[in-house]
Length: 319
Picture 1: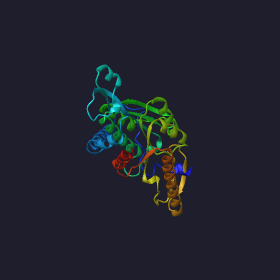
Picture 2 (picture 1 turned 90 degrees about the vertical axis):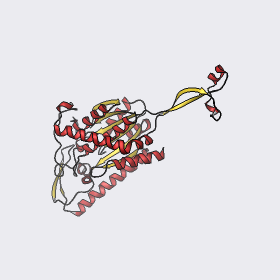
Picture 3 (picture 1 turned 120 degrees about the horizontal axis):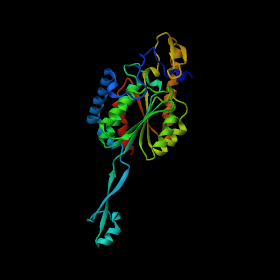
């Protein structure tokens, strides 16, 4: 219980999230501050994709394979294994098949909208970082002519936006993540992964974005990994890893409402907490490695683009 509770501390470190209307609000009804925030994310991430990320994304995520394009006359040096014998027989001289890469991919963002995302100790909440991350990935996808879709979940499926193309579609995804008011407060990754398997029959590049503070999801993750190109993106905050010395404080689990008193003056208590969180990080890393799931670590107080670019480059080398 302590690990789950202390990893979702709230109230004393960050102001509560502004209330929003249930479901994604229409653009016309958005508060000016929120509309400005969405536009700022849109402009910032669009610029980053143009300047730095588009090429790395394209290199990291190849097309589904090769598809037949046309036949042409054989030329000296062509691979004889590509000769189309049916056409060759009809035309009385050799023709070969030409193929091209099937570039278009389907990209799905599985975004955790549970209450633990409404936390941040260094200026931005985790759900804001998630929105920027989703925006970067969405713009990278549409720039490469890929479709992008969104599944918002808590302890049940909250909202689904089918994969499409276009900048207006990306706007809708960003707006949904920032304004969606979920019915559920807890996290259940099994629900999200089962839904993914039910609705997406063809292989998709899938980014699972969460803090991964949830009941065991190993079996579901393994099944999803077998069907899809799955990447786990864990979003965290420095105050979830180490608690400063601020005296006796009341900590509340924002997903369950449970509260405890925590003596942050006691160095032994702080050290035990930091060690526990370090073991959890290592356990998560080993689980992803054992299942063959790529993973990216994002922190609210650090660069968002650097870990993404680093992952894209590593992925390009592996594939």
